[in-house]
Image 1 (cartoon, rainbow, N blue to C red):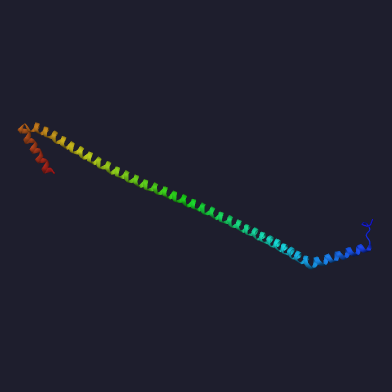
Image 2 (cartoon, one colour):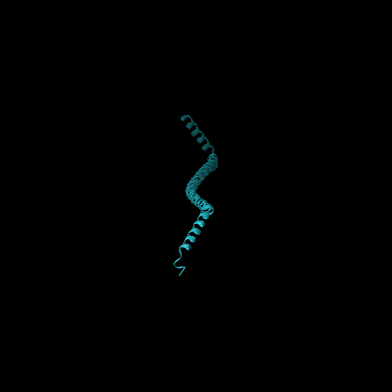
Length: 164
């Protein structure tokens, strides 16, 4: 039963040993342990602060990335809009040029047709004049065979000249 209920001497030596160990620990171990704990606490706090800063930086970078992406999208949309406008302008220009060329071709064709028409009319006039002369020649030859008819015709022409 000696261990369950200790003597006063044993208690005294245990307390004295405990106080000596406590004094030795306080003198040599607690300062390094407390300083290493303090260093550990500081490093953990510093790590938490840097993690918070990193989170904030990531948030800023994310916001900046979103802003850059939005600007890039806007720029892309603007470029597409400009490209569509340029395309439309080119198409309109091509249509205008084609319309002008078609109008020139039509005008040239009209002038060619008019020239050909005038040439055909002149040809017909010449042919009709030639036919008329040939017919008149034949008629006059027939009428001029007789000298009395010749005299009557000359008299008639003379009268017409005087009347005019």
